[in-house]
Structure formats: structure tokens, C-alpha cells
Length: 471
Image 1 (cartoon, rainbow, N blue to C red):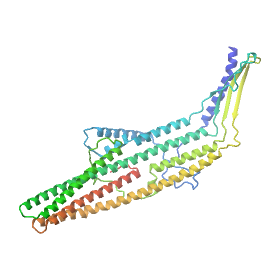
Image 2 (cartoon, rainbow, N blue to C red; image 1 turned 180 degrees about the vertical axis):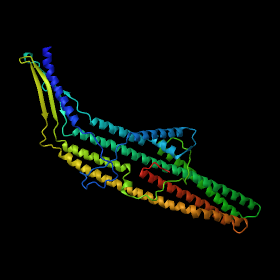
Image 3 (cartoon, rainbow, N blue to C red; image 1 turned 180 degrees about the horizontal axis):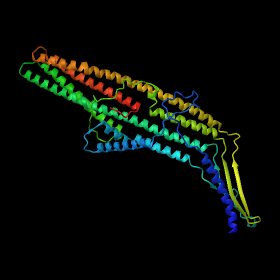
């Protein structure tokens, strides 16, 4: 028993040294605290290596609960749409289906989990190692038996910097998920509006075709009665055939747009029938939006870039402290057959950074900070360009819609009423009536086009502003 104690005590001493060293490092490790939230980078220094990176604060428990409730509501809507009895889709149902089923969002959610795994791994301390420090010697009276434990002690705050950089990667992946989600919602909204517009065009063209057939039949009866010429009949037949051709093309276009909507949702094989909505739906008023930094900096793409800048600065600091050598401590025991039998083993091992002081990696990390900082500015410029273009299209389409509603459509309908009344009294010929009839339907189709353009632009603006309010 005495011999056993003499062997075990030095080994326990080595374990205690390693454990105390680890506890000291853990006690000194600062917790990761995100920077104070802000809406702009305008206060940053011109030097990208030293300027602070403001980032939004993590979501609290209430926000997480609200997100969970939203997910449950979206899943409920998705379940409704998956029901084969559903004939008409609403925009909310289409968006819910996309969020629940699109593979790009599943990929983004997996990326968040992956980043969290890396962040957890970065905080783990190196395992101790059983290492005798000397080979076992078997030689009769000269035999030597050794046993020991070594533990690497990380210095310079390397582990804390690794954790901080990994936390920034988690934050970036969360913003990237938001960016991808709003881009998907924008695509679904625009595809939905396209289907809705095609349905409305078909309705107008079916009315046009019905009128053209009625006029052709009336003219055919008049020709047979000798009260009209064959030229008038051929003209009306031409109008009817043109209406049929346009209607067929629009129906084919509708099938293609339905397939596109299904693909945008993430279920290309899912059959989409009609969608339920109104092209004249009330939408947010974007007329007063200003292209300032506060509006643009709300975009998740900008925040993802900021997170990457902050991560690159953590990695730069990590590269700077890399030359600080870690210390490996060892404790153990050695037993020899000859006298003296027991010996304690204690060792300390340290690398000497003479030639390799991580100079190349430090230089590369500095360049990375400058690169990702410039990328944030580039992204902000790109978003500003897209938002300015969408606002211009929204305002132009809004002016067109207003003109059609207040002037063009009423005038076209009133003209048709007057021409039809004059035709019944013999004041106008059939050509004048066909022209007036065609004008009404053409103006109606142009009005639908203007409504579609306005809704498409509004959907893009809403996506860039990452607003959940639409329409």
C-alpha cells in the first residue's frame, strides 16, 4: 500500500497542476458581450482596423416566443394549402408554404445550427494527455516505469477570441437567414401577383371574346338578310379570331406563371389552381420613403456584413496573439527497480517564437478586415440602387394607375356608350363600333399591366425594407 501511494501521489500532483491551470484560464475568460446596437456606421473611424462595429442586440425571450408563435401560425396556413380540397390560394398561404417548404431556408437554418456547433466547439478546453515523458525501459534491475499527465494551458486569450469570432459567425448566419427569407418572400409575392394579373387578363379577354362572337353572329344574320355587307362580317370575324388567339396565349402564360409560383414556393410538382386576391388591393404608401442610411441599414444583408467585419477583427486580434506561446505542464511519477525506487516528474514546455511570429497571417487578416469593410459599403450602395429603382418604378406605375382610373378608363367607356348609341341610330358604321369596343378592352388590359407593375415594385420595396406589412 505504501508503494502504491508513492506512485499515485506524484501522478495526482500532476493532475492537480493541470486542473488548476485550466481553472485559472476559465476564471479569467471574459464573457462574449455584443456591441451596443445602432443603426449606422457613420460614427466609425476611417481606419477599418480600429473602428467599432455596431450590431443589433440578440433577440430576447419575448421575441423568440413571438417567432415561435409566428412559425406555428405559418405551419397552420401551410397545412391548409396542402389540403387537396383547397381551390384558391391567398397570398398569406403562399408565403407560409414557401417559408415552411423552400429548401433554401432549410439550408440557411442548417447553416445557423452549424455555426452554433462551431461556436460551442471553440469554447472547449484541450483534453489532458497521458504522457510519461520517458519511454518505458525493461531491463531487469535497470527497468524504469514512468507514468504522467500533460495539459496544455492556452495563453493570450486565444480561446476567448476563437469563441468571439465564432459567435460573430452565428450572428452573421442569422442575418443571412433573414436576408434569404425576405428575398424569398419578395419572389413569392411577385409570382403571386403575376398569376393574379394573368387571371384578370383572362377574365377581360373572355368578355372581349363573348362580345366579338355576339357581334359576329349579329353581322352574319344581317348578311344573310341582305342588310349588311360581307366585308363587315369578315372584319368582325377577324376581331373574334384575334381575341381567341390572345386568350389562348394568355392561358398558356397563366400556366407558366402558376408553375413559377409553385417553384418559388419550393414545391415545383404541387398543382396550383387559382389565387385569390385583388390587383387594386391597398398597399403601404412608399411615396415618402427617403433613401437615407437609417432606412438602408435596416437591411439584414448590411447587418450580416457588419457581423463579418466584426468577426474579421476578432480573427485579426487572434492572429496577433498567436505568437504568445502556450504552456504545456506535466506531472507524473517514475519507478525504477534499482534504488531509489520512486521519483516525481514535473515538466514545463514552451515554444519560443523566434522566426515564426505569425507575420504572414497577421498581414492577411488586416487585408481581410479592409476587404469585408469595403464589401459592406458596396452592399449598401447596391441596396440603395435597387431601392431607388424600385421606388421610381412604383411611383411611375402609381401615376399610370391614377391616370387610368381618373381619366382614360372613364373616357373609353363613355366613348363606347356614345358610339354604340350612334350605331343603333345609324350614325356610325360597324368599323367605328369595333374600334371603340377594342379601345375599351385594350385600355382595360393596360390598366391591369399598370396595377401589376405597381404591385411588383411595392413587393420589391417591402422586401428591401424587410417589412412584414404587405399588402
